[in-house]
Image 1 (tube, rainbow, N blue to C red):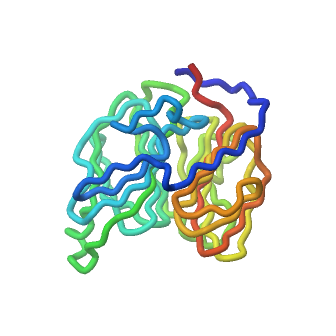
Image 2: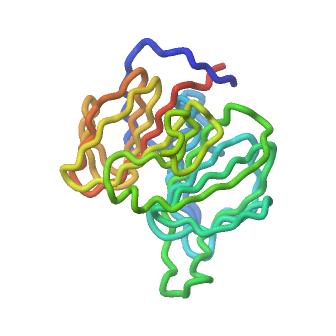
Image 3: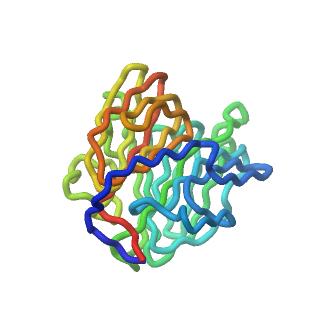
Length: 258
């Protein structure tokens, strides 16, 4: 596939209910996939814009994803509850928790693991499942040096509105918490209380994912946790929380084609 910056002409609002997602359920993992993933292959649902993976994962204590490879992918992990231990072949390690932005650039090749192992560090009283969203976007250059970045942004989230969590766009330089290696994409997050409202950015491609709570989106109606909306040639709609909610918004100014 290649990247195209051609502007789509037709405005589309495509609602994807939570219950329509493919599911992977084993003893230690409850995973729901917004796009084709692993054994769940659907050629009609491979990506939207530059976003290839939006996995909604719950991992039980003491388990997780053992060391495995990635290549030429920008991977952003956003924890909703609990904590996740990351280790990779470049020597980076850390504990990811709510309010911490984290990005791994696979580049020309990297090995990493992700486990709900924080209970070993903190004691059994913290042995809770970890709930996180993992998102993959393609880089705009292949074969770069692998990298890792994380940054605490809890204070920014508490101020309200859409907070830029990860971006490669020049418009967000100085504002993005972490940088991704695609100049056409950015992830923003809003933590909202009932009645709070934000306006979606304008972009050729938007992906709105309700991580928790309930919202209402103009042109889409009421949405619940796990629902997603794929917008094309759109933006400017008001998004309003009807309960305490957390929403992840990707804006993308290019798409995968071919």
